[in-house]
Image (cartoon, rainbow, N blue to C red):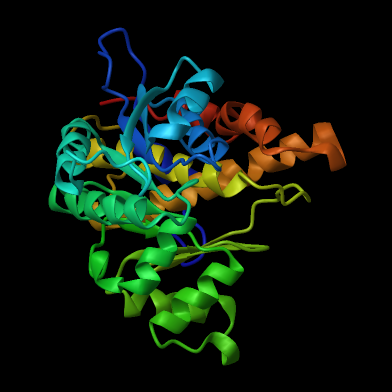
Length: 325
């Protein structure tokens, strides 16, 4: 692998081969934690993008008032209304009770995406901090995006040093994160600044979204320069976070011996970076395809519809050539 871009043949190693012997769940189970009364589309985009890539099961763990709406978007998602806002927390239910139910889902998963449509409710955020800690205790790969990044700014310790984590800040989110970590990016280029933030967080992977996506754990760095669309509609970041969760889930199963392809094996410490890069590649290409078709009218729902096509464009021929062992 070069310092800036891995070979697509390497990325293909972590993608599960399809065969008649597979069972439900063999290609991964993920959850998107987020969704409140105001924001219901974000967790839908995150979970659905993982399904579009080929994950078998996708949960949405959301606030009670968001659940019925999200259920109406798709029958393919398992929507669990376990989060509670301040006004919806029943008198006889504690945050510990909520986390116990969330833990039952986490026990089934291979990766989790956190933050899409989370909102700013104090009780929901308290539940999510507990869920992140529970996922970390289980060794689950975690993607933190959107409102969950504010939780890291408030307390970097919730994810500090956890190398199974990927944070996906846009430009304003990155600046807030850097400030919270006492990193001044003003005199650095995008790559150096992302490396410093990753180092300050103890080697977690940062995906600094921008004209080119910078993916780094502070030691190794990739830059995804895949051409994307020109629209910046809300929801594209959620598609990326769900896509990263899908590749992380596959990476987790690959690390556990779930499958082996012909060709060079991937070292365990490379998987998180490679998964993040692969998701950036596919999401940016999906954005390009959607914009090519819809132009100025492009919405994130159009991007979502292109995720599986973008995946096939990048990996279909490679997967035919890279045979399972």
